[in-house]
Image: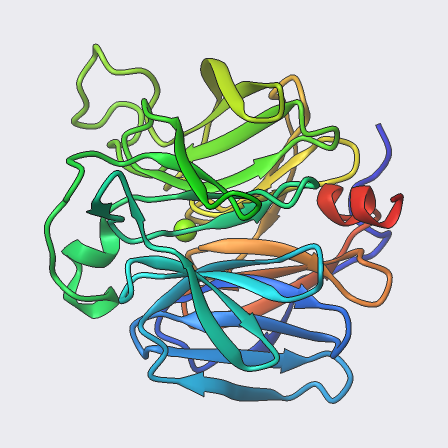
Amino acid sequence: MQELLETGAELEKVAGGSVWAEGPVWIPDSRVVRYSDIPNNRILQFSEESGELSVYREDVEFTNGRTLDLDGSVVQCSHGKRAVERDRGGVVEVIVDGWAGTRLNSPNDVVVKSDGTVWFTDPSYGIQKPTEGHPGELEYGDHYVFRFDPRDGSVCPVVVDVEMPNGLAFSPDESLLYVADSGLAPPGGNRDPDRPGGHSIHVYDVFDGRLCKNGREFVQVDPGLPDGFRVDEHGNVWTSSYDSVQVFDPPGERVARVPVPEKISNVCFGGVDGRTLYVTASSSLYRIRTTVRDAAAVLRSAR
Ligand code: MG
């Protein structure tokens, strides 16, 4: 397989000052990486052009993961609102905050499929950790992955068997959905032997563009756990872990590892050519040059 990193590429720290940086997305129009600093309850932006970090918004109800919608607006998760919301040019509106008469827990990460549907994970960190939201109850009693269809307003659970669904992404042709489980103790730790995997990324076949079946473990991630991740145009999964960005090919073999000096939460591809990997890791934002682009960005540009 081709080299995944540019020859001579080195990890570079480009910004600091966060408590827990998460939820990065590249915004092409303004050439910035926008990301959450969850405990500080604010959203930051790093400008690739100026090299400067700025505060985009404060008092944001503990936003977490985010992605670009098909129209270029930003879709993001809000622990505090227990919702997924849209930021279009600084105007924020909730797009989904409940299912079957109950409130969501605390949406964590989100992707938009090429048909415009919004898929998001709903673990309970934001109602458990006072530094990341507001204490609250599990109203539907579990942690699901949901699909929201803006065409008819419907909300449906699509994955119900992951302990703590966290990051998620589709394969390049959207025939597979990957979901990280950050809920179980690591391999060899204090875990229930009857439960599948531990600190794993699971994969599901997507039928009819909306049904997830045949769930199975894709990889176990060690050390630490998989939080956010992205899939590149060749189907490789670039995931967070405790000490490195780890890259797994479609069969699940680890093919690259980028050590990072802080605990990693998430990654996104960005830069003018889409081949710079940005990494949110605890207090900092890092980047490294790669040879690949985000699968979803390539799919959209082909349409
Ligand atoms: Mg996450």
